Image (cartoon, rainbow, N blue to C red; front, top):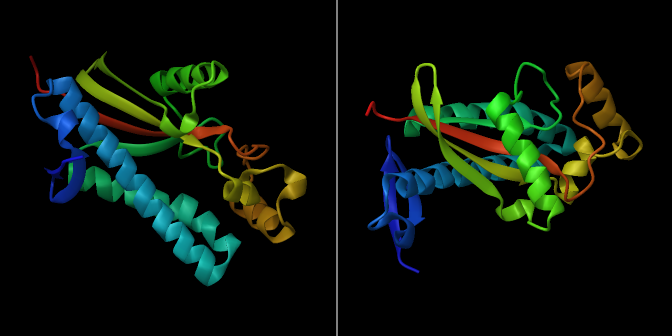
Length: 196
């Protein structure tokens, strides 16, 4: 497959030329949004692996919260897209709370999964009119992987040191009780559209 490169605010993202050449504006936004979401997953995955290898599982808690927010903010500045992660059950009520549209898409993801679609490849995009203008919005599902269960599984399966750290840092934590393959949440990206 021929790969082209798209530059967003200095960040180089690869995209299949099949999705970019002769594409409608919506298809181009779709390709850009998908590329930004993939970049967040790639960078966060790399940081989490490094921290877990060097410092253990407890360090992954910081990677999943502090580093994830930092990476999302950097991507937002570099690309012009508003990038964040939203969750079905939040660990920190100040971050990751889905808005009404995101809640609706998360619910739709669950219904699509019940009909047999995989969370691994699931996404959704549309143009939404909001009070301050129109936006292209995109969400990419985040499935729970086996390694996520160390911090997000059933309370009995989470190691004591991790449970203690979660309790001290996140007293209102609701992000446990997942099983591998569940929907953890989604990467949500949003771009204001030029006035028509």
